[in-house]
Length: 195
Image (cartoon, rainbow, N blue to C red; front, side, top):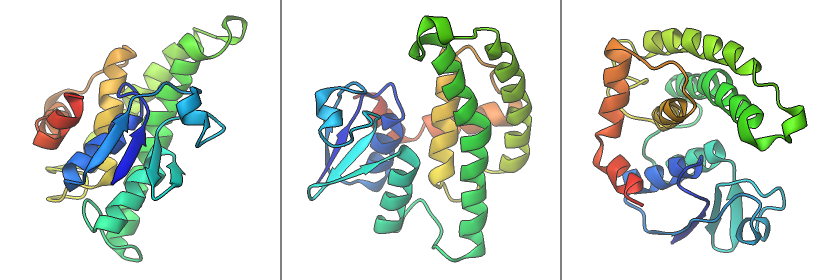
């Protein structure tokens, strides 16, 4: 049994969705970043935190990779060329989507007001729009980034797509819009969203 700590309106959603895809039982503790429930296991106070047998795992991507490897699903085996391609998609998404959205968040409500630079968000939106085109090329005929099999980077991509809506970043069109909808239509996504 796993325990997932963190609010659903954060990267914690990725872990909840992964566990739903895997059909693994878990308990969800919707704690806020830097709350006592989080810092008790991770002094940096960031979410998500995954507890398993008393051990705390952190960082959503590390947790997703661990769960995929452990349960042998939503991933290609380590040491294969397909895994290297999959990990390349993951790194692309972290660099070109997650990082841009996180920087925009920091300059919207996380940093102290005197350190925020709201104008930077225009540049971030421009970069994000460019990255959407690159993602469309990567998805190609799909249905997923790695072809017929959904993998870890698809979860990251879809989560970032939802985050982009809230952040008022550019939205995908055409085949890429259909890709995001295909992911949101998955029953496991719906179960995680219902939390």
